[in-house]
Length: 147
Image 1: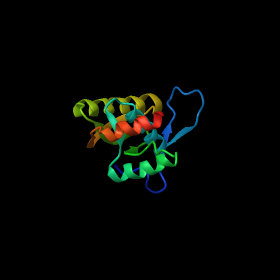
Image 2 (image 1 turned 90 degrees about the horizontal axis):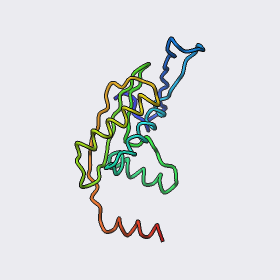
Image 3 (image 1 turned 90 degrees about the vertical axis):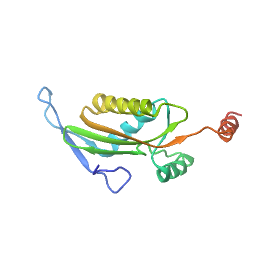
């Protein structure tokens, strides 16, 4: 994918209003906005623990500690005038069906791109690069936050 979020200045892509629009003009949707919407959709899927590779998750943990979560973490998009392609990198929960998680992520991102962004989805590629195995430390951290 050519336009990877989190890199240098994101490119701006234009989406031309359809023929049935009442007013003339152009709507511009930046790559970062498309990536955020895809990231939100992917995070809502059951069985997804986190998005992104190891380094991205490490930076995400620092951002979370500063309360500035990057919703586009683990997402790269290529946006054209009327079409979008999305790559999603996922850490899945254990034990879940990895094929089901990938299919559910693909479906959620496709639906978000169609419904919210209003663009034709060329492809949604899902890479599962890790599996999160719950440990007793995770349970202790959950308990500590509740008290």
